[in-house]
Image 1: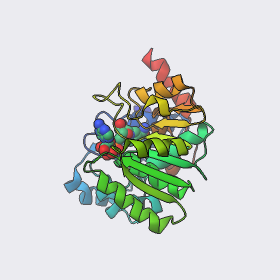
Image 2 (image 1 turned 120 degrees about the vertical axis):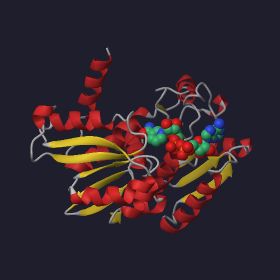
Image 3 (image 1 turned 135 degrees about the horizontal axis):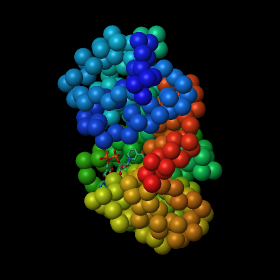
Length: 292
Ligand code: NAD
């Protein structure tokens, strides 16, 4: 790696806290090397209060781009010079590029999710979706699905602090994408959830249920998983959640885990950084080889 760095190496970075566990530096640096690009990607542990100074340094040092993770995604959206429509609606950025000294922010979790569906042969345009959850991942998916022309987005969330966020998403989408029918219902209303799943094409779990310590649980009654239903999860650890296992057992049209969302979000970012397609499959093969 050291042999690649010289006086002209362009820097990209991840900002947030904690960042030490992030797989992004390894993934992007592997791809830069593969493409012979004189770029390097580092992670910096910064908190919300450091962000103004961070963004000034990004400009001063002419960073080419990078990513924002928790807890700085929201403040980042206020500090970029320009942001995408999805970032404006969600009020967050997870990626930025430096275009001639101006920082352009975007949010690509939703794009990555929808690209992963597409790679699996599923398009959202004209489809009815049920999305469980109203946190960061769920909101990104709901907004991107609406921007990409889904017919309906039915949001279900339990009666917690995220419920108001679902209502706010509904309000914003009513203005931004008036043709898309968006509804918000309490997850506790089991009859309404069953009716919505029966009427939908794509069911998405975007809650943290399924991920440790809530692994081995699903929010959806197995009896509702029919053969022509597409089921997708955002949880990638474990790779197959209880919902995905149930969907496979029920013979659902597709049962798509969250790992692809993570990977394709990275691929969308890589394309923004370099204009090149990320060698996703080669990187996956390399990772599998390392894990042996
Ligand atoms: P968040 O904390 O912002 O939101 C959590 C959501 O889960 C809320 O809607 C909350 O109401 C719901 N929830 C939690 N426990 C619940 C329970 N017991 N019953 C019903 N609802 C419950 O989290 P987030 O950042 O949106 O992440 C949600 C999940 O998506 C996580 O598992 C995360 O790993 C995953 N995720 C995956 C990717 C990816 O690239 N695959 C990206 C982001 C997040």
